[in-house]
Amino acid sequence: MLLDEGQAFGEVALIKEDCVRTASVVTDEDTDLMVVDRALYNRSVRDVLEREFHEKTEFVENNPLFKQWLPKMKKSMTIALQKETMHYGSPVVRQGQPVENIFFMLRGEAEVIADQASHKTQYPEIWGELQRILPDLLPKDNGINYTPYETLQRRRTSHRPYQMCLLGANEVVGAVEVIVGLKTHLETTTVTRESDVLVLSTNNYNRLFNRKSSARSVDMLKEMLCQRYFMYIHRSNLSVIDATFLKYLTIKMLDTESIKLLKTRHNRKNEFTEHDFYEAYRIFKKMEKENDSIISLMKILDINFLFFDTTLPELETSKKVLTDLEYRMTQWRERSKGEEKPGTSTSKHIKNGKPRRKSSSDVSHRKRGTSSASSQKSGTSRHKTTHS
Image (cartoon, rainbow, N blue to C red; front, side):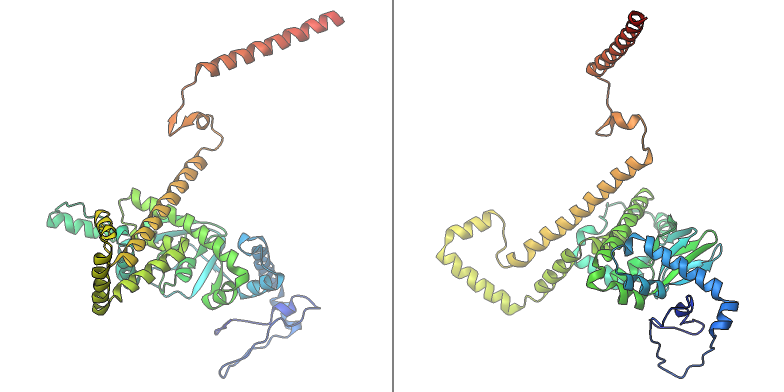
């Protein structure tokens, strides 16, 4: 990890009397240091730093992301985290700001606001990649001709920042940008009351998470972020905002292999030179002379022989990716509906989104249950009379 001006090191070994140094620190340029010995440390800052270290240790131990980590890795994570206290209205990150850190909410609350219309100009390379390999994800032209005034109003409203969600304890800010590889932040996050955050630099993230032993933690983090982005997409659709870019980022987190496959096949299709075209045409003519039945079958099925190897699998892969995204969104909506009214009696009589009518069998069962209960009561009273 890299330390800048104003940061301290060496405090971990001073927390306990029997502690030893846990890391080596080397300067890469001329540096002026202020040294605090153990006696001054115990009198002045020990209680504050010890309390902060225990807070970070408890956070790492109780967070599900680090549950499978070895004690050595957990300790490295605890040392790498830096605690910061933010007051009402303080920005954690701003949209368009360079990505340098990841933030874990220790306590408090933060509001996420995003201007989705700016993503196209903010990330031109990724937007161009989206247009090339997943054109079906782009919004369809509805064929409506707007007046100049309506066009101006739509442009003004499209660049209006919208509130996406509120984040609480254990939530992460800035992780999507690091996972996907974005250079600037997607959204603006501002604390709505006094909050404590733990800051992890991108260098420390790459050092601790880009390991084979941390693959499970990365998958858990991706799944947690995808659930949040499902909510973003749902809220955007309700507000009639184009969420194409958020959908593409969700796909990049969910299905990395399919995105790589689409990129590879698109590059192969672009590398199809004029010489390859004439070579394929020569083979096609030779095949046409040798076997007319296969050629006629290909014409009936409307299969283009020259681009059969590259075009058809790419279409299948893109459809699979979009279908999988829609299926996960549907699952998220169903779970969200179930969590809105837990334990209510009406949820027990719902089938296919409509309340189920009580059948005659339900009524008869209820009557039978009532009669059996009354017979048990009468039998009990009869038994008491005989005993007396």
